[in-house]
Image (tube, rainbow, N blue to C red; front, side):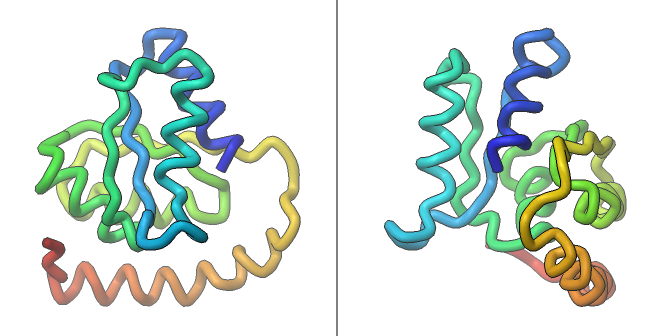
Amino acid sequence: MKDRLDKGIELYKLKKVDQLLISGDNGNDKDDEITVMKNYLLSNGIPLNKILIDTAGYDTYSSMYRVKNIFHLDTIIVITQNYHLDRAVFIGRKLHLNCYGLMADKSKYKKYNYYAAREYLSICKACWDLFTNRKIE
C-alpha cells in the first residue's frame, strides 16, 4: 500500500494529477485501509481537499464502477502492483474509462506468489462482473 501511495504522491507533486482517489474497505477498525491511506497522504503534504475517498471499494470492479458512476471521473491513472495492474486497467476500460496504469512495485513483495496466483481467480470474477453488468450502490 505504501508503494502505491508514494507513487500517487509523486504524481501529485509533479503536477501530473490534480487529486488522488483512495479506494478500499473501512468496514471495521481492524481493516480500515481508508483512514491509514488518508493519514499517510496528509502526512506527506497532500491537502485533504485533493483526496477523494471511496469507502466502498470492496473489490477492483466496485472501485472502477464507482470511479465512473459515483465520482463521475472519466480519465484515471490506476496505481497498483504489477500482478494486479492489467486486470484493473482492463476493468476500467470495459467500464468506458480512459484508464491508464502505473506499476508501484519497488521490489518483490512477501506473499507475491500467493497474490499472483490468486489473480487468476480474480480475473474470472472480473469477467463475470463485466458479463453480468454487475451494479454497485
